[in-house]
Length: 78
Image 1 (tube, rainbow, N blue to C red):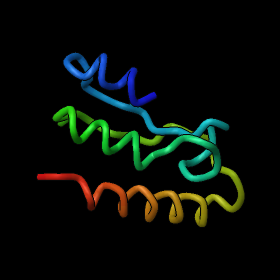
Image 2 (image 1 turned 180 degrees about the vertical axis):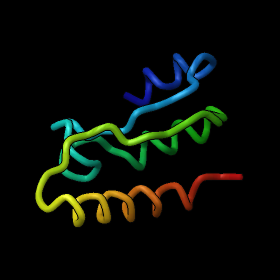
Image 3 (image 1 turned 90 degrees about the vertical axis):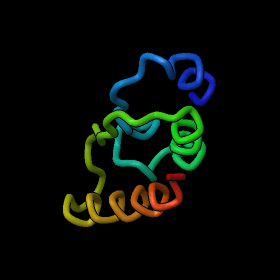
């Protein structure tokens, strides 16, 4: 995933985040820390969105995924 993002960095305007099981981030195998770090290091300044199904209670799933992604984005340089 990270190699693909690096190779397309010059044309990326938006990235949809979803986990390997198409559920909310943190429920599958996608290394979101590496994905977001790669985007940051390529200078990505486009739109990030979450595109997924929700696993478990919808409110809890959104809150947990939001906290997880916020913690990673808070480390974003600049």
